[in-house]
Image (cartoon, rainbow, N blue to C red; front, top):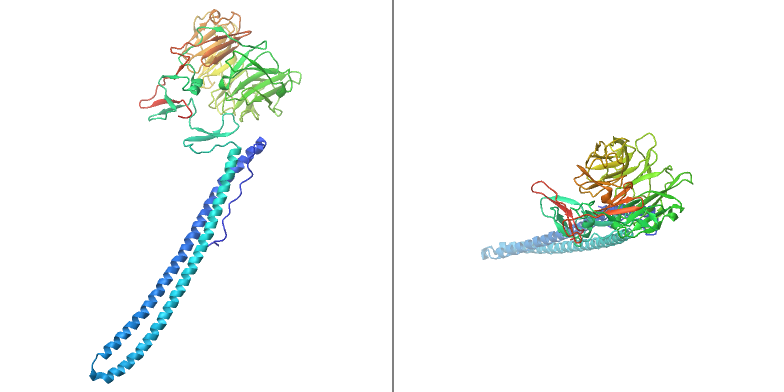
Length: 598
């Protein structure tokens, strides 16, 4: 048996992560602390097992001592039985009769001698029994004392182990607090993950607002059935922000819309987290920001991040979770391209280090909302980031010669499609590897979008003399394409150049043309109808270079004008919203996550 006084030991945890640590040091310390906590578990388990063994050994000593005392008591009892038997023999001899007196006297004398001897034996046996009892008692006492000592030692080890465990818990709690890890109390059914902004770790419900669940049984009160019901916007604000006003179709009526800021007309607008909008205009090293749906705009200077106030702004995008990335170009510094990043929804910006990447025009950009960004360039290489834009690598686009990646889009499920000329590049492993896809039917591509449900639409300029509009679609992630047909009126849009596209994600698609017209599909691209310039309010030669869905409303940009078409809903769209009605197999029900907690 191992020495009971050689206590098990538990390794100290590494230094905790501190808020003042650099990010890479902070991440390394957090990883080391979490690994050390895992390694501590078997050490604590071993210490508790060792304690149990010592307690069991002490109890064994106690049982052996008790058995020795019992054996000594049995020996004393046997000696006393011998003494009683001798006395009975003497009485029997005396009562045998007067005729045998002499014989009896001799026998008595003999008996007396035997009695004396028996008494001596009894005395000796008694003394020996008492000695054995005393010895057994002493052994029992010694065993008990030894057992108590071992129990006490075990108790000390237990206390020390508990103290170490408590200290480890304190350190672990401090480590968790240092990196923002909340307690897991009352977090049953939650998952542990990185926060949306990528700056901390958090517990969150297993399902996020907007996720769809198909079930045969009941679900909790945070889900709503997808049976086309109407609900209050105020009761489910997060879900409403994701679903919008379903059942509404923009494009019927149009009105003027503000898209100017500090005298600059915005040529491209993106919508991010909490409805914050960023736009690009004629200003150098500047983007424009709106928090009221585009009614007013504030100039946001990127000069400090880019190192100059004279850079031309190029592509920009958002992960829709608060991170934005923008690129700029200057011909005065050997054609250098710069990139800046914002983590506070476009308010402040810092320079991204792309020194290890060849210079090129960053012609397009897209983010999947889960940390992966792809930037298209004017070369045969793409730029890829897997850590939400902090670091970047160069990725081969699959073509041996240089070309401009004019548009990029992702379904946010690992598939990406890009365009150059009339050709397609595609990736199905989240942008790690790329290959040449099919050839679109819509001419040289100007814009590319997806509903993130398997349908992709590319729009562009058809070759001269072609009598169909430049709209093509793919159902296999850009591998094959088919040409769309505008049913009414065809003569007004055949051969027209298409510059921009948008979708509400639930069946409505819009394409902006060079003639100030918009074509619309309300049946998921099966058929298209023209909305003339007289309907949209644009001039017949006003190219619609930008289309954007703002909730369920459509925003169109053309030169110095912006027009907005509000959706028409068959219910009170100021207070209510509608969830989709999705068909399911008999016995099942579709649900959508409506709230984080009940």
